[in-house]
Length: 512
Image 1 (cartoon, rainbow, N blue to C red):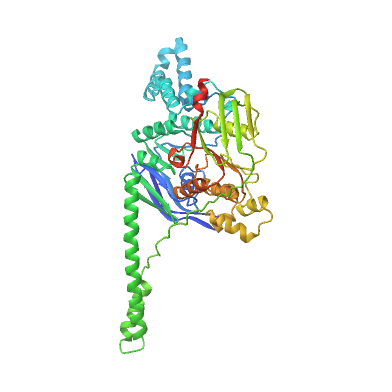
Image 2: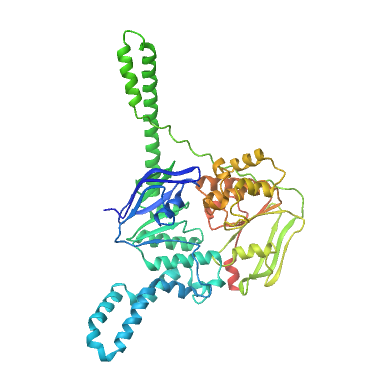
């Protein structure tokens, strides 16, 4: 019996059809990776399975005996709560039972009367490994790098990326029968991605994971759901097995389609020649057969890859950024003693574990935050193009067309459409509220804005988050060919290793 049955699922957003009569099953032990181009409906699938949105038609039915855990990176958390308190809130029902058990033990006059209930409560705690909670918390906290942050730190004191890790940690501690994870590696560094990959691959639980990190999917998956053209197709095996099966299936379908088209043309030609002759009876019979024929749809065309191109301004000061003995943070130092110089044309990568302060460093260099110690200078003779981590919009109800028009009021509607199309933002998505687009589509809109604004230097904070492989490759080529300077924050070594002039590991500054 399946854990999940999706049957004849239909879902649309506005005029765009996301799913049409789609079907999918999830079984016990399925480690399912969900793949597809940006905007096809992967995150929508997770939301449908998690009950956050309802289908227009069809059904999403879970086995009523199981628990389902959904990673909500934007969940509300009491900011005065500590990391440890939030993690342990995964066990609030067990702690409630423990309190009731303690009260029963304290009622010594009615101990014999209460013993059946005491036994029941004790068995429930034992079955749930209640007395191993601290061990479980330590394991998850260490694995995701939360221990290094200080488990007594308040939620209000940590970054957005750290907050996402804390939410993931609580979900893993709750240990539901099925996990629903949407891009869980976006806020993890290499070390913690490795830990999560091992954790999931060894799990006996079922899960569904949306990810554009195909190396990660290769490690954790034993089946793949390919979302394309409103359909879901399940392939058994790892990600590499899926690629082979998909390509074989596409080639097989192409041959069947071409064969059918040839037969249709032959039949139509026979009908045309004989419909009025001595063979008209046969021709009419052929026409009826042709009318009843279930015609194969044309093979789906590969979605056009985005083409990013950043224009570099000439001139300006030779030294673009200079930092001396720099310390950054909000209320306390995240790290100190950083020395950094970036000259015209240099491409430098900032690395370090999640939460160390990479984004805070960027904001300090840009002048959005004051240094806590030392000095930093961004040349006032250069123009900077900034890609901020996170999907934030001044008005999330604006369409991409409006976003670009507001930023570049002299551009015509035709020019705006062409620019968005070049970045693989479809005409449908261009007219949709930007806040309702997928993460990948929103990222492309942000990148489109940068392509339209020539600059001396690009400063980019985790720009590959949410992007599919096609978009990542296009961005990689664009940054490689960019003639200006670049300061890049990225946790994907494979993305930058063939064009970076240097990598600055700011974890070394923790020792100072």
